[in-house]
Each structure stands twice: as C-alpha cells, then as structure tokens.
Length: 413
Image (cartoon, rainbow, N blue to C red; front, side, top):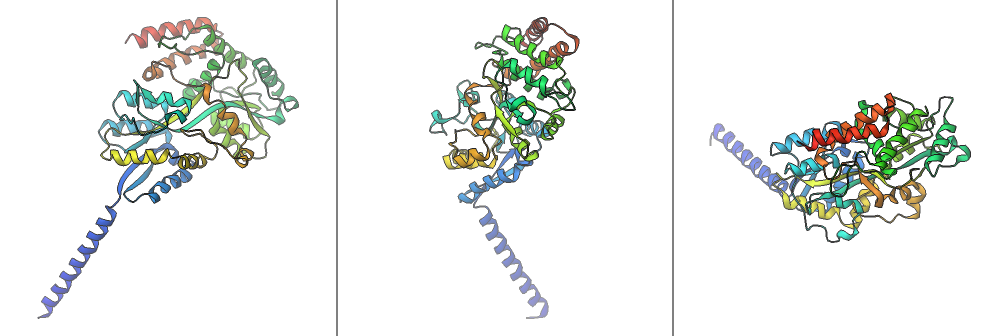
C-alpha cells in the first residue's frame, strides 16, 4: 500500500471514528427532551436562585430538561406576544395577570385542566386563573400589599390602625427632609400609579365593576377612595413627583416613614436598609381588601412539547417543590399553595405572616369582567384622578365623567 492510500485509510478511519463519536454524543444529548421557560424574574436579582430551582427539576429527570430564558420585565410582554403571535416562542411562559387575559383571548396559551390533584389546597387567588371554567395557568408568584413603616419615624413607634390615625401619623412624621408617606401620582408612572390608586379604592370598599361586570367607577366607595387619595396629596406629606425607585430608596435611607407596597419591595428594603426598624402591618383603610400581583405560569399553545411542559408543572406542584420555590424567592413572594412557615423562617422574615394574612382579601388590579379592556379604562380613570389632584375637581364629578367616558369610548366598541 503506497503512502497516499495509507494516508487516505488513516483519514477515513479518523472520519469514521469522529462520526461514530458525534453520533453517540448526539444520541446521548437527544435522550432529554429540551423545553424552554421564559420568565422576567430570571433576569432579576432572584434569577440565580430561581434557575437553581429549575436545575432541581433537570437533575430529577431522565428524559426532560428545562432551559430558563431571562427576558427583562420592560420588554417581556412585547417579546412574548410577538413570538407567540408568530407561532413561536418558549414552551412555558410566566405572564403577569395584566397580560395573562389578553394572551388567553388571543388563544396564545392552552387550557391545562386536570393536572392539579388537590385544587382545594390552592390559594384563593387561583380562581382568577380560570376563564370560562377552564384553567389556563397556575400561580408561579404572588405578592400581596400591606403598610410598610419605619418605627423610628412614627410617634412612639406606633403604627396607625385606621385612616384618621394614618393621616395624623403622616403629618407628624413629615419635616426636616423626612416624608410621612410616599405613593405615585403622575401619568409618567401610570402602572405604579394605578396600583396605588387600586389599593386606596379597594381599601375603602370600592370596586371598578360589580359581579355582573357592570362598571361602578362612580360608586360611593370608589369616590371615597379617590377622595382619600386627594386628602393625602393635599397634606404635603409625600415627595410629590418622585417615582417608585426614588421614594423606595428614600425609605431605605430613613427619609420616608410609610408606604403601601408589596412583599417583594419589603424583602428588597430589608436588604438595602438592614439596620432600619422596618415592620409591616395591614393597610390603614376601612376594609382589609388590597390589590395583589399574580403571575401565572402558562403553556404556549404553539408548543411541540406539551407533555414535557405538563410534566414540569406537575413537578412544580409537589409540596417539597412548592416550598423550594417560595424559598428561592427569599421571602419576596408566595406560591400557588400555602406554606407552613417554621419558627426560624418567621423570626428571619416576620413580615411573611402579615402579607400572607391578606390572601383572602386580595383583589386583582384589573376591571373584573373587562380584563382585556383594563388598559383603556385604567387610562380614563387615572386621567380623572390627576385632575382631582391637580385642579381640585370634585372626586364625584371626576368619577361620574370617568364612568361616562368608559361606557361610551370603551364598552361601546
């Protein structure tokens, strides 16, 4: 055999060996069915803990692997609707409730009935994840609202238990660069403004619609909530114009005495201001009702891996994995099922019990019965609230106008 043929034979053997190894590796890699899971928290400070939780699933499986996809909150919804509307996108998607209903209406996510064995053990807010009797999501993250306060800035360290005491406390705490309370009141931050307005309105017994879906924007209870919002605004006890990032930083610096915010914010404040005497109590309104943030995990209607996606959801709902998920949130959020906290956990994060006690009175920050039209109705409401705050328009007149505009401009379409 001449040198040429010897080189060819050796080369052929090497190619054959490479193909054999490549084929073997491909076969090994193909043993696991890979699915993707997109969630904005993967890109947040909690991302590493949540991705480690996903890894627990991967380590427990022989045939399925989940790949987390981190997309920032600001671009998440647009990215998902664009991809899924084009018949693509991740297999699993964590939506916020605000976008969940439009996704259902657009047939972008599939019904997932029958995969939860004990629905009676789910938190009460689970009812919002069913549309026309069909389940389209499972709670992946829940954050309730309550009053966060700095004891050192309140007279005698006493937290207000009703609205009159709240007003008195906010006034007493204000001065020398310190503000008694902080909330949002500009259209520049309309999303957070809406959340804050909802908390006042719900706390005074108001709802944006009744059980039949009829708008109640000008009901006495809603008007009372808006009037209370105006009362606080007029007291000059808030850093007017400050966005949430600014006044939350001020709170961590001991420059704000109180704010009504969700459990994720509380967890963050404890990191930023660990030496401050920060505590949590129910919001100081006539009723216990408050808004909440609910983010369900859903299955993309375009998925080619339905059974694998459902297998992940079933694994997620096992008690030990629910507890592990809530632990991954670090006390900032709750999960689909109630978790029994240990004394050690409550000693480390005593606010958990307060936030968890609100679960039965949590109301979506949506117009019930008109969920997909909420953005349009929300804008009308907030524009009227701005007029109340800045031009002294009577709250009743403002909400009467909001009712008329919403009925004629939005519902009549």
